[in-house]
Amino acid sequence: MSEAPAGWYPDPAASPGLPDLRYWDGLRWTEHVHRYDAVAPTYRPTTPDGEPLAGWWHRVGASAIDGIFGAIVAVVVTLPGQVAMQRDQRSLNEEFTRRVDAGEPGALSWYLRHLVHLYGDHAWLYLAAAVILVLVHTVFLRLWGGTPGQLVTGLRTRLRSRPGPLSWGRALVRVLVYSGLLAILEELALLSGSLTAVGVVLLVGGVWTALNPLWAAWDGKKQALHDKIVGSNVVRTRP
Image 1: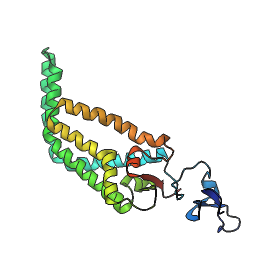
Image 2: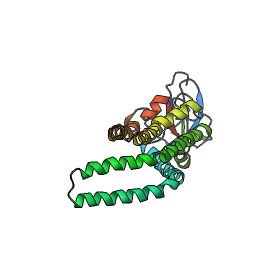
Image 3: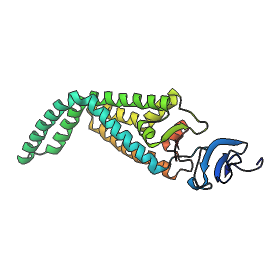
Image 4: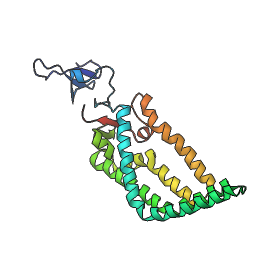
């Protein structure tokens, strides 16, 4: 095996009659083993040391669970201000309807300006929720090696170059780049009361939100853009 390229090969330590595969990293046998019928040796991508990478749809499922988790946290943190905000928005909607029925010019621009100010008045609550979520996901990545959604679906986040949880710094940067910084900027834009700032953040955020996770679908290393920035990979911990 000394000249064999890295890849999956019959496990020399397997019991007779069991067609197991073990990953050869080009220099030595690793600890990564699979049943022959549970892996496509040639086409299933892995980290350089042989740990199988998560598929794109598997990552989408984990992200959906993270979204639900984030929504629950946001509701709990912002609940004190939601009742007041809903009351104020109901009054704003009624005034907008009155202006439209009366045929007043500029009713829509008036409504949008006041809507931004309304959300700006309560944005500090959502800013607090965004900061809390960033911290929670950072702690999960550092201490348990994955976000709540990843842990539930059998995924973990590690450096591509070596196994193990991310450092505190890399975990924080990964969370911020993925969605945390964008959420914080959205709330800061609302607090500014500027329609232009809100529009720019929403436009840039929309492009980033679509492009960032999609990158992993066609990338040869299965890395989204936030993975490339911190050098991470999402891997499967169970078949």
